Image (cartoon, rainbow, N blue to C red; front, side, top):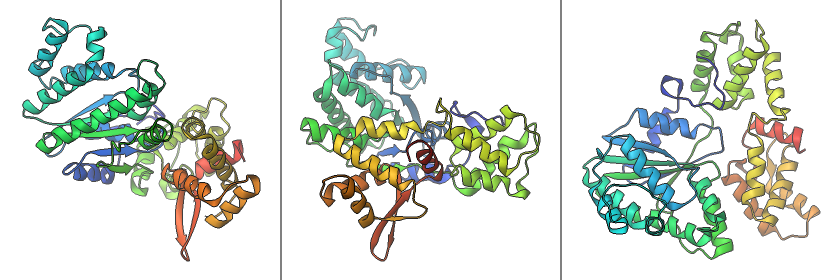
Length: 393
């Protein structure tokens, strides 16, 4: 198998992740799921693997929604993918009934007409009714949903009010149709739908909890066995010598935090440099290349951009101060010491610092440990800590 960092991974190239996938399938027996993690950790690959290997009679539909800029585009795209997957064999009796009501013709054509854009809610509801009446068990996986919602908020035609209405509609549909056990949902995204909801609550008076009855499942590193298996696959046909018995696989897994995206990058570096015998020194060179790459092929700036884009200004300042200091620490850093450092740079109470720590912990920047009944934190990923130290420390 050739390395493919950042490319589409399908079929047998999607290794491991059985534990995460089993957890998602098990949860879907009772409730819908929010799948969350940072970019390039492997969320979409997990959804593709579920789509390719459905369980318990489900028909999974993976719908990439990030590029949609209006709710009616979301509805149109859902209709098109259901047609593409031949799920309803182009029947859609309920949808066509409503479309005829608003347009006057049964043949579904333009979705850009004002009367269609205005009535996207009943059109979406009619699609859901058609799915239910098809008799199939359909799993709708909306990948990139938080980014789509962020676009909605900024769009003048929709804005925060329309985005709140869209979120409430998705909740209403889940509450209305999930009880049938014939439809369930996965919401997936790299910035975390909680950040969108938090912004709407804080800045726009949103008072709903649109995903509080969904199970949140965070995706992180591969397990050790899976990461080593990926190393083996990527070295099977490689034009260089690389053997597990000298500890090189273990070293690659350690230096990449067992994240498949970075494992692919390391092997891609080996291919591009043309080395014939790979040593730990070459692994270090591959990691250093990613840390110092001006094009940011490792997508590390996503972690910084997410804070600058989605965090409130004061929280942003606190978060960056904490992370800029944490990258210098060799071990866990106790919460009281973190609070004192922040207070030495800002006139602020302890509570906002604690809230910010909780946020960057839940957003996967940090991991937390409890020692002697005291909270302590460090970077979740050593490779991100190294990047932060090189570029921000």
